[in-house]
Amino acid sequence: MKKDRKTKFSVVATSIYEGNFLETYVQKMTEEKVEDQTRLIIIPDRKTPKELYQKCKDIKRRGFNILCPTLDDQDEYLRKLGPIFNTVPYNSDSRRNVGYLMAYELGDEVIISIDDDNFPIKGKDFFKEHEVVGRGKHKSVTIQDSNGWFNICSLLNFSNPGVVYARGFPYFARFKQEKYTQKNSDVEIHMNAGLWLKAPDVDAITWLGVKPNAISFKKKSLVLANKTWTPINTQNTSLNRAVIPSYWFVKMGYPISGLSIDRYGDIFSGFFAQACVKHLGFNIRVGSPIINHIRNTHNAIKDLNYEFMCVIVLEDILNWLTEVKLEGSSYAESYLSLASQMEDAVQKFDSFIWNAATRGYFHHLAYSMRIWVKTVKTLSGV
Image 1 (cartoon, one colour):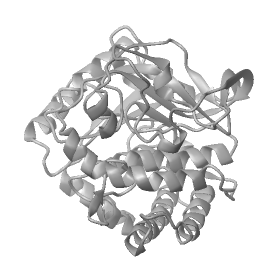
Image 2 (cartoon, one colour):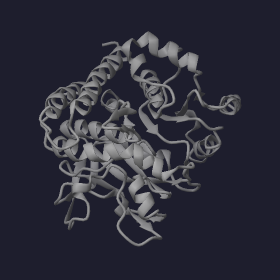
Image 3 (cartoon, helix red, strand yellow):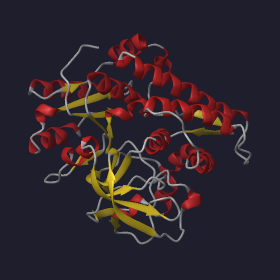
Image 4 (cartoon, helix red, strand yellow):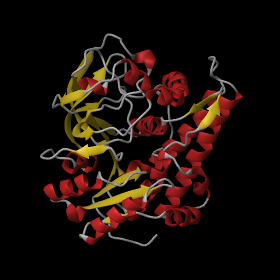
């Protein structure tokens, strides 16, 4: 990859549309006066139209820092890095892994993951809120939940009645009496999960049953205590670059018991990285910045078919993950420890969904996690 100057922010997205979302980020860069500190990395896929490439060229011609590698460029980049080439499929959200690797190799400090239907809000800080992951140690309010789980959707106001949970929130932890304890603590935030107005990120079951509409933010970002967890997606999420060795976007699309396991690659990635963040003594913030999620067209019934297997396996995986004791003093070591222990753990799960295919899928994930670490180390010169 041709070397470029290091920036403070990288915004990483993949898209199969024309790229209309990009102009809002260019405007936001200008509004917050971070044009010289920000790089956009847009990863096309096989279905991406030529209009997106042209839009990226136009933005670059106007003086903004933007990368939009063609599929040939991406393939050449991945092949030079080795076996990682076979873990990043086409026609998949996991193409954004290419963008994460590029941002990491270029040395960018704050890596922001977005979807192409996420739009920053005029007059509201976006980059300056995500900058918290590079702020270092400071005082902040932390929240501990008695059940060990915090519902990030509780920070939003909805036009619909009823309780709304984010996609990936385990069903075993829902609809329980919550008792929160808050205190001022010394924190160092390495992951920041921004939230979404209009269409919150919920699972297909919730879309079909509730169809929630988020109308406002309660204006209170919180830092999770070490023993409190929440799902973290790739929509409006930022990382300290140190986290990248533990942030492989999990490959999906495998058939298990007649269903395809899909649409939760970011949720698995968020939980695995979260485990490493907590093990190393760093922190996760949830709340701001807020974006508008003007959701691309979806068929909720079809989404449910793809998500259902993930919903089921997460019930066992998360019960295990929240108790596992990782080893290692770095993100790479912690992630390798997680991969190894996960392989052992899935052999012991005995609920109805665990068969040879299910266990085989997680063994493949563990293999790919090792490939990811090896790749990141190559980029680090280790």
